[in-house]
Image (tube, rainbow, N blue to C red; front, side):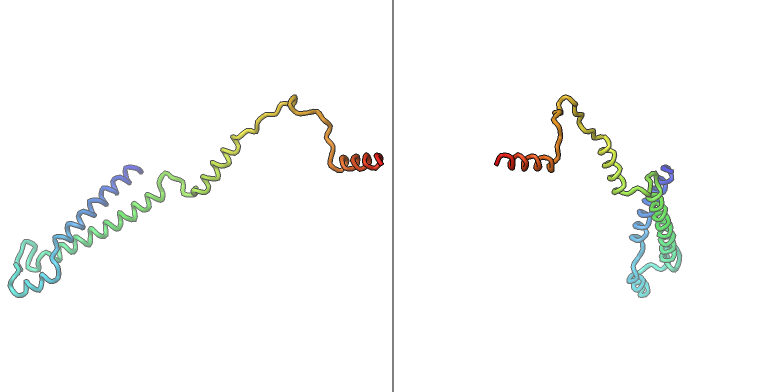
Length: 136
């Protein structure tokens, strides 16, 4: 599919250059008014009507082909090798979960932890109140 995309891009560029060239070759509508008064050559290589019909038809054909290649390139850009379902937010969430899973908590040795008995706050307050009343 890569060669088809490249080929379509090359055809697209040639059509763009062709359209530009054809538009620059064509005469404007004001030039036809001058030909009616004898200042233009009415009998040319393209016939008595001039090059207007030939060049305008060729320009219309090139413009149609340019439009088709534009749509084809747009289709190729959306249906390429990239998955369409994955958004930037999905990628960011995936990297965040993978990096969070790779973080390991430091190991704590059991010898460093004091072996003092753990009492809750209500037991401590009860013992301090009883010792304060017994001191009186």
